[in-house]
Amino acid sequence: KRVQVVIIGSGPSGLMLGHILHRAGIDTIILENRSQDYVLARVRAGLLEQGTVDLLRDNGLAGRLDREGLVHRGMALAFDGERHRIDLAGLSGGKVVTIYGQTEVTRDLMDARAASGAPTVYEAEAVTPHGFDGEAPRVTYVKDGATHEIACDFIAGCDGYHGVSRASVPAGAISTYERVYPFGWLGILAEVPPVDHELIYANSARGFALCTMRSSTRSRYYVQCPLDDRVEDWPDDRFWDEIRRRVDAPTAEAMVTGPSFEKSIAPLRSFVAEPLRFGRMFLVGDAAHIVPPTGAKGLNLAMSDVRYLAEGLLEHYGERSAAGLDAYSGRALDRIWKAVRFSWWMTTMLHRFPDQTAFDQRIQEADLAYLVSSEAAMTSLAENYVGLPV
Ligand code: FAD
Ligand code: DHB
Image (cartoon, rainbow, N blue to C red; front, side, top):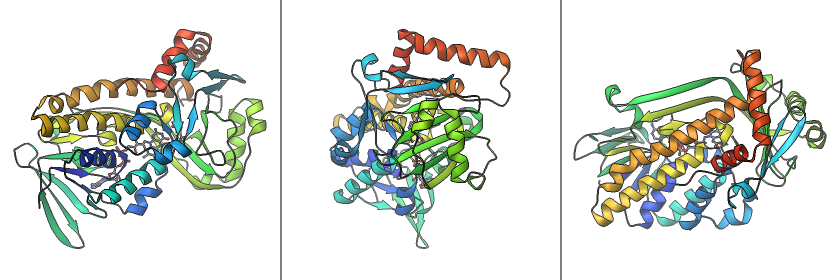
């Protein structure tokens, strides 16, 4: 069997790339090692940049997003007992962000792929890219005990941080850059109305907290927690007591609590691999980079990588030009490092670090005080938060 592009991984980046290529008449197969239900049930990101919404809309994927997504024109920072609103739209020339869960993005993309008839193999075992350094790459996998081989022109490694694509690159051909943060995020979902119609990022002596949402009746809340905590350590009552102590008093009073129906702990990491092209294989999304969630950049960066790579592949097949593919790694990394910088800065400014000195503490307070008193600083925050241009 032969296709033009083998896509490894059916997360948001693999599905989005497959959709754009299919619309352009380029044939693909997606190989995913988990089941479709497992991929759909993974609760992750929730906030889409304007550019991500535009990409979905331009590709005919925004029907439900336009009906159900919540458009946000601002967000708030809470610290030192006060809440400060940042006018994102006013400071960014009218750009907005949209709350629409990654689970919903994934569902819309999977529905579109099913409707297109393009193939996806779920529960594909031992997916392995071969020969991407030469002219005839191929990918093998095992399904129901049988080994399959697919020849192709290109391999798109959209298989996340733990995927096989980056792991298949010889160590001498790749550089990696990493920072691991000494805390995690405990997140819950609950069927209660959000405490505010916009997001609240809180810095407190007890650690970071984030109030976000999935709809007008469903809330998502996060608190910074020690890395070795387990979800069993956090019954709902303890979670609600803790988050109310980390936000300003009016927010704590307004918060509606209730039973959680999802609870998980995620570690925080910054990671970048360079380059993103190895002959005829490309790394895309979390396979190439991880950001801590504080800036809401992970899913959005995956989507801008897809846009750059899709442009390159369309140029290759349509105009017989290698320019777009040759430029992919550099163009994507330029935007990636800016988002890595922003996510690191938001994380550093808003969390309590175990080894934080009194000096570090004062710098953090000054960073926040300067931010909310300076239109220049708020403009920079807004420009990055709504998403840098693609
Ligand atoms: P993924 O979504 O990871 O998709 C990769 C796919 O490849 C998966 O379906 C995986 O099963 C599959 N795969 C892996 N290995 C193989 C293999 N060997 N063979 C075949 N298939 C394989 N971002 C935010 O902005 N805000 C958040 O709050 C947030 N929370 C997160 C919480 C968690 C626990 C995690 C892990 C991530 C979170 N992110 C968040 C980041 C965001 O979800 C990711 O950036 C986004 O999912 C990236 O999409 P992707 O398609 O590149 O990778
Ligand atoms: C969400 C998660 C984030 O990390 C963030 O910065 C904003 C929103 C969310 O899950 O809604």
